[in-house]
Image 1 (cartoon, rainbow, N blue to C red):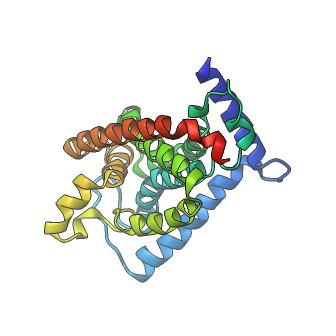
Image 2 (image 1 turned 90 degrees about the horizontal axis):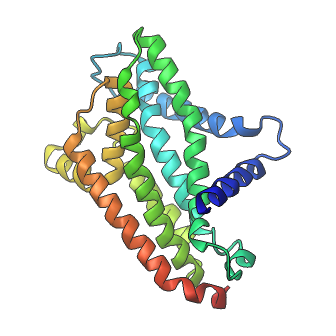
Length: 259
């Protein structure tokens, strides 16, 4: 029943986002591609960041695909998290309904952002196949990357959505934190350029770093190379999800009074 309602809410959210626009649901993909072009120009052409991918030839095209594989989970995470922060304060009419399952509201923008990222993922898999002249069967393991990604986003989404009800500075603060977090995650630079004493902490304590590396392992390399980091990130994401949901449930009775 709740899954059916969540599906309906996500469909309505996706339809409302681009209602009336000519390109419709192509806008998320166009935004991702424009971001990709900018970062490729800055980091591959201007700063000459080099990769060492055995499965693909060196060059700006390979760098773009490698970069795209990192941007996809990051963009889905940040879009879902930032929008979930306002999911309660923008819908006080639903919050004040006694029978409405409030746990679904922060999940709606998170699921919408995830679904939008799948279009870019399909294009990435197609381009990698064309460039490498082979079909990578490891992509069937991608749910392994989605599991910690969705748990992490939902857990933090519950936290920021509930805190924003009482402190409206949370969404603005979140933008600053996400910008700092972006450069602490090996998305626009390879993990091997991080100084060795720092690399361990970045890959093991930053769950987004493990998720990004898992995407690249499965889509570009064709095999999982970061099992340990993935397992730790999944456990950490599960704990954050349970903690975020617990805080959300504890604060929930006060939402209607404040809004």
